[in-house]
Length: 264
Length: 263
Image (cartoon, rainbow over all chains, first blue to last red; front, side, top):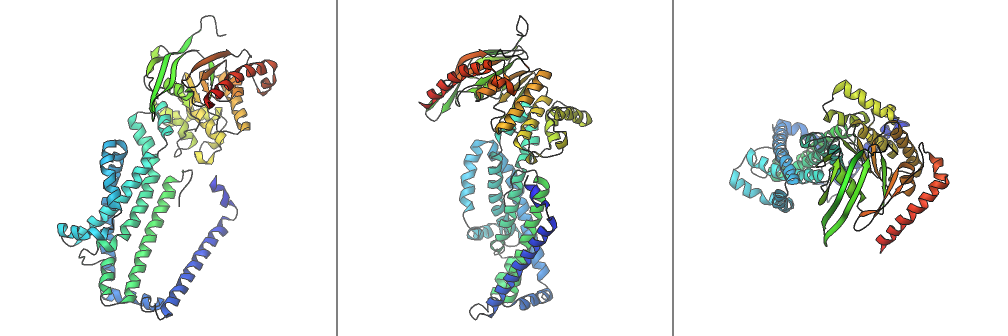
């Protein structure tokens, strides 16, 4: 039903959205410029042109692409591992109550601790390099995705399962043809939240004595107060984040467009 | 009505159901006995909490009785079976499947696939007048249309007994009247044994051959009223003197129960 609204002038609605986005961007640039002029903030916020001039500089230093790819590999690996562990654990929690009773309090407890706090312990155990970074991101993404998927599964409408049963579905059919599609929206929400957590954990993950990476570089640039490339790197993290989120949202629309209501 | 020796389809024998509630044991049903004849249309009215849904779930095999038993076609009921179809108040359509795929679901469960399943499903979708919406998703349908799909889906499983749990309870008055008429027409064409729960006395009388009145706490059968108004029935039937007479009689009993529950 909600799809019917935009019929009239669908294109102009779209154009309007772009226009507002452009306006929002322009306003951001204006605020940024003001910050770059004000004496108290000008050191932290060099102006746009200076910041973007850092792109060739960082390429020349032979770090920009290495940092981006290193971070993406850590985030990607940790995130993938987090998901691969979260999915079965969430299903097990929903299916077998004693398991949930033991595991859920751990997850809730650890979830509220900033990863930066336990990073040293992981470094002591796993050494420096790629390994601790992946572990930190795995832990953080596992926690959020596991809870989200579990909540989704237990909130599946029980009448759907009853309906399937009276229509002749066996346990296997119910799992594949009801539980799996019914939990898909929650799994995708988990995937989206997980991606965001993976990126926000990046700085903590790369404080493990990484050799490259966006988070690691920001910290090392900080040693020389090189604010322009720092700001560039911060913006790159933001761009990566919003790109991943948009991609996942696209996937959500493709796969779960059948949903009655969609949360933002 | 249907011949001298009534061909009994469902026997409910001294069914009792208790739950463990927060404050100890709750008796939902206490000694319910009922026989439903082949192709009979039985409606059940009673205040909320009288255990009428519990009874339906027990017949469906979704709940086990604490004691007593239900016999369908001579077999004691344990678990669900394709001989019994259920229509729920909340429609319970699979939102990720189109109308066609929803109606095909029970056919697929029977091992009927592909074109054959599609054609059979379309037959039932046509029955509820929704062929134009076969490729739509449930979210694109109104409440009345959703319930029509649910009815088509229940029919597609080709059950001998159709159990309906306040199927029109969530619909507006106009749509409800329309669906009642459609259900009556369908039932007259394709006779089935129907067990229909409602809280609406008018609905119970217009549809049923017998109206079962249930009392609350603990749920049991208070009275059974034969509705001797001939079919085909329609909305004008609701104005007939006999209808009003029966309505009065049933309503006063149901009302007593409402007052009981209030206490």
